[in-house]
Image 1: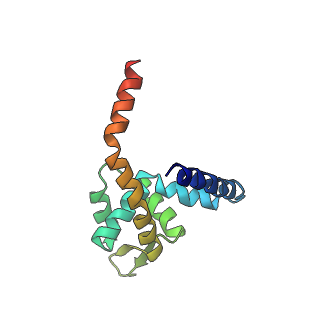
Image 2 (image 1 turned 180 degrees about the vertical axis):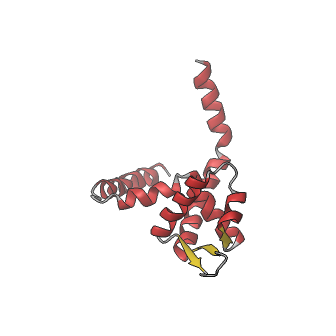
Image 3 (image 1 turned 60 degrees about the vertical axis):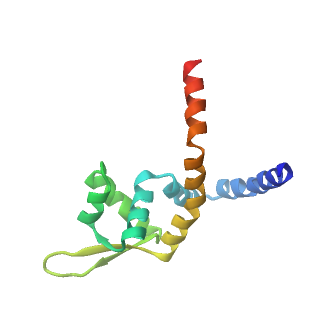
Length: 133
């Protein structure tokens, strides 16, 4: 088990190098979606509820501002994680949906979420210990 971990850590250095060598920052920007509360929220909501309009999305995301939701939707659409369809009707109707790549990202996040949930008590204990010192 320990040798497996060591091998994976060595292998991970190649990923870190590749992320650092990215002049455009593309890989880091995509990775930033994984750590962004609103991006993950939008992906999760669209992935579990299907296509939704802006107002419907906003109701699901407690605390998000209009500006932040608009910005998040634009970034996710730009990176192909969601799609935007404008019905071009007189009364404007725009619907957002998760793409296959967005679903892929969501599915790849599940092991990390699972690890965080199952490790929550460990983090609480270490924080309490640190804060009491």
